[in-house]
Image (cartoon, rainbow, N blue to C red):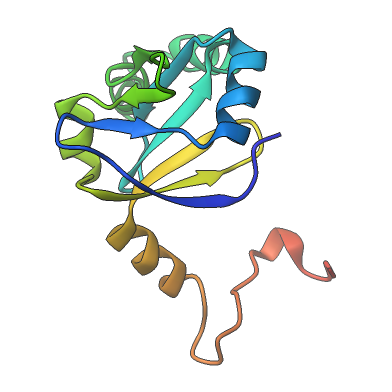
Length: 149
């Protein structure tokens, strides 16, 4: 289970050092094989390859004749790249994916249970601010009405 947020620096070549606790968990779950792809939000998704496979299968089972399904296939599978971790514990983010998500030097790696989101720090801060109302409280989705922490 991947959780927590980490502020990271990406170098000029697009290499990103994955924090040791997450790197160890990713390596244990995937043998170092991961998939990095685009999201509909301005971020990237990082999955251990075994967790990505059923998602890709489900997406590709949709009809390519349906415009919404085809758009989803193009976005998630079309941008998907196999990535690994080098001997220094870094992963390389391709120029295409960096540009798509607006990633520069400062990025946020945010755990989402089965995977991570990779955001530019600026986009992450905007997203975090937009999730709260004028009283500083999170807007709960209707599916969670009556839910309490």
